[in-house]
Length: 261
Image (cartoon, rainbow, N blue to C red):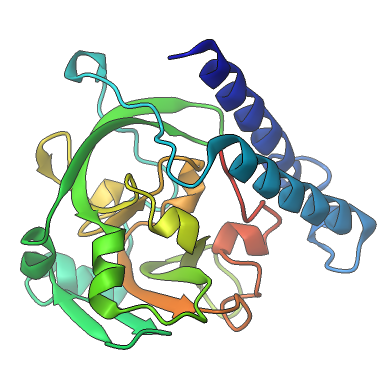
């Protein structure tokens, strides 16, 4: 890795983690207030991080890839690792034989793709490092279909700006039960060569603990941006109308929408 890459990745990782970690500290309540000063500062910092990252990396710069010998441990599962939602459990029981990925929204062609159809698309295998907002990292091999190919098949309309991933797991709890997990990225990251819908991990079928049957890999962002158990992709011009409108489950709880590293 070139010296500039080390400096850039560490700088961006540190800045993003420091901001994203605020909700874990005593700042959570203040950051969670939509009309609060802390929230406004975080949103400005998020926008600044987005612009700086785009300036430094360009649209197609690749995240570092590693050799097989550098895979030293299994990919650590975290977050939601064993969804108990009835719909998901039914898919697990049938080995995902009835699973379909829906591609909808601002597209010329709505798609409904089976796992076999996705596995028969052109694929990409990459060995990359997963950086978690919790501070740990892990190198693993991922295999999947490039998201750009699926977007091309759906023929994205010019008004689209974001890709929103809907998921089969719910997260957290409350009077109304769990909240459906969701996440989003912009089209620059969606069309990045290393952004894939992964169905393979370290040469094996992606296990439930890591997001079966499909999870997103967005290698230039922190791990919480890589939604697991995805059921749908919606192309949209705005993030309004999804969750609380901040672009993801964790973003609705105070995390940065852009978690570039």
